[in-house]
Amino acid sequence: MKYGIDIGHNCPPSDIGYVGIRKEDELNKEVGVKVIAKLKELKQEVVYCTPSADSSLSNSLYRRVNKANEENVDLYVSIHFNGGRGDGTEVFAISESSKKTAKRVVDEIAQLGYVNRGVKDGSFLYLLKNTKMPAILVEGGFLNSKDDMERFNAENIANAIVNGITTF
Ligand SMILES: [Zn+2]
Image (cartoon, rainbow, N blue to C red):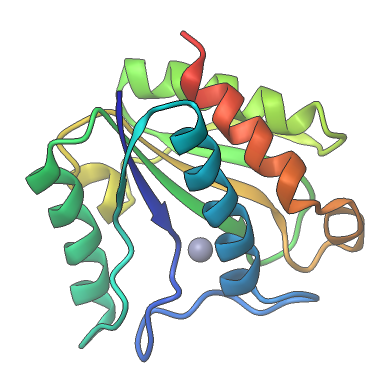
């Protein structure tokens, strides 16, 4: 299977992640790099969808979507951590098949001890609206949550995501 992996934000100057107790860009990258390595170990094909620099936020988002569509990946996975108030993990999706994958991922992450906020409707998200294949956006935890940040372990979350997206 061909996976499009998008390490959220990490695209200066315009697309920079949220900063809470920890920086979203750092966490997205720590997890995403491990997800990519683990998929490759499983002999899966990986397309890296994060651009290295952008001219605007919309350009950063457009290029992620365009990469996934051009490469015709089977599943697009965007990796994020949440800003704002709250605790726990949630995964966004639009189509029914995407929601099934999202449910497996959110349940896997919740098993690590995070509050399970479930699958959320991602129809307002540009990345999910414009990718042509099943697509999910993972929110691994809240950057302002002391509990979530103390529990954070890139290896564990990467394993949870990989288990969720490679099980059918
Ligand atoms: Zn984000």
